[in-house]
Length: 320
Image (cartoon, rainbow, N blue to C red; front, side, top):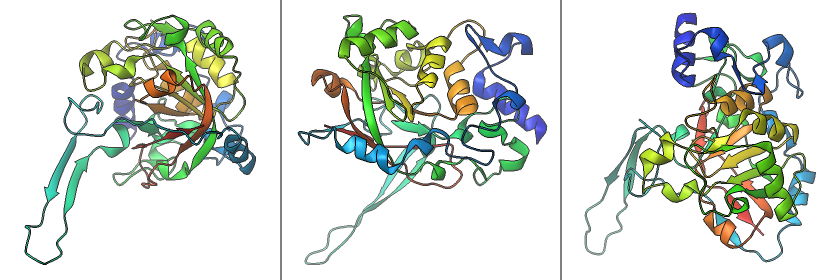
């Protein structure tokens, strides 16, 4: 099991370098287990930033609903690559099980879906999605929680319904472009200046939603969308984590940049899902929010509680 754990880490993070080179990115280094555990939510906690979900969080969000305008933020989930983005190498097939029409008789139609449902399309990452060595969020260990039928801890069933204040951070708008350049590294200054331009400030428990413009490529140029993506620098991630968000989201495949900063790939995934216990939400459709200048809204998300899953395709909404 331990050998398998090491192999899985290498595949997950792409770390085919020596350990010293792989442990850090500019401005950030993964703390030791002793430094990062137990989490601030307690030694047995599996919800992480989901613990911000409280009655007062919901009530604060409802006060932002003034017009009843609803923005659907999920892209279409389809096996057709010209319609959606599924993530590299993911399996998605849908087979209809039709009934043949018969005069004056009720018939029904169903489908069989064969898919890596937890990690495709507009999707939320659960904490079982990433580990450092053999250690997950809150220092749960691979040998203790891994199984062939789902993870015994940290699965997406622990997320539950999330409703909170959503804040759109329009970095592309700050730069005066419809889409940030290939592999652009978003800095703390970019985030702070975009918020200042919108006259917004993040509050603990918010959904911080970053607009880069890259969502426009989904289903049109999936290869570019995935391989040369703009994303957060490690320092931007540290700053965002210091704001205590419930969710960090973006209209990109990874929230991390590809290729990322020298030193380590997928630093944001490592930082948020393993160190801080902050959920990541990827592949959002944000252009309608940008066009409406909807910078603040009620944000609602509920994943299917598939026991032991590493994430889930979701259909979040923004309401103002």
